[in-house]
Length: 637
Image (cartoon, rainbow, N blue to C red):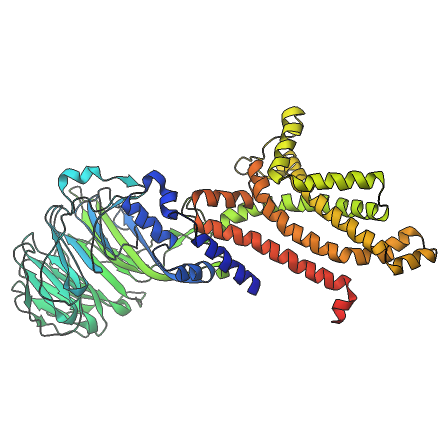
């Protein structure tokens, strides 16, 4: 274990000093600023080297998010593309196609219902909420009292169609029209409400409510009389509004937010969302499954009770006309089409992340936000987003991560290619070791014979030739000239090496050549040395048959150092497969390693190198154990 940890440190350190930027090399001509930032985040290059190492070996907490969309009123949901730097946390849609979202410090927009997102702006502080009244007028708010305002949809209209895209994330901040607005406070702001394009309100920590009557150009702070954090705010008209927050706080106004009064309610749980239905009914949701309704503008409230009680937190509620939807932290979705007169439970089905589990199951992701739109035809479109911190295991959890180049699990790539390399290595080992040991013992017992000179000189030539030279010569002779075997080992998808075993012959011969020569020369040398020892001479003088002398006295002593050479050559052979697999286009781990080097896929490079190093380490461990079994002195020690 200590050895593998040391090897992993060495591999990681070496890959850290590779020249050039890995993200730029991977993207090539698609290396736009947004794509670079996105890929660098996925590869962990925006974090310290020590964090990347721990993430690779042990694991690291990661932000994981998803956005789901429904076009049938919430009955079925589909994930939509959100390959943003960090997960989307809040959304705002004004049509079934046009929408905006925030993700940490970034603002994105979409023009196709969420399939592709364009980065518009990056803030200095974390953003908490975003809301649009129409396709032009919008606000984004966040920590330290920051407010950003746009009257042009966030980007100048003449360049909307000029955003360069690659994948599902597009180029960044092209003539952004998001401008900061002075509020005079530094308190974190949490939610936004529109009554029309001119009348806006913002809620925040410490009971803060900001009010604007000029479209967000200037703001006044009103005294609410509470110091609890307000988490949601909503207005039915320019006069009638409600804000809710921690500790079951409910504030009501009927003069446009100039004055607020606290509503009496039995709710003690934190309230997370508030909205108005088309009939004027006010709805609030909160922790512990709290769902409150008011028919008198928020003065008095009643709590709904379901047949199967809700126990988990409800995070958001949204109404558009008579249609409404509620989202909760354990994937809960409730929908209504009659102003809340009746609610139906829905499920968001999601394919499992496990490679062996492809069956869709109800999601348990924490759903934190809602947006909905009803078009002129009455068709209801809904969006909900999830943002959660999850622990992503590394090597210790059997997860090697995702290749940023192919988007495929590295574990799956290695699992697919490792058996091919193992077949090649085992076949070469089974051919080379018995034959080389037999030849080495024979010429060691019969030195200076013609066969000994032929094998010694031939093995020296074989050792001198690099694997790629041997491979090319074998291709020229047995493929190009004699046409006995194929020159490459390319396999079709789903095809196994056993479907065409002929593709193994030339790679096995290439690997076997050098391996045979090394082991044969070492075995010969050891046998000659043991044959000249006193106890072997004594056995011969006693008249023991030569085969008995060799088996009982020569082999046990000559094989001890040979075993170490065999073990070392097993590790060397597995490393040498890199060249052999490249020459013959053989789909193994070695070729995977070369591909990772060529494309600068750092995580794939680290993982494949560690696999090869592990084989080398375990082969040496096996040699030490075998050495102890064969050498009684080591067993006694």
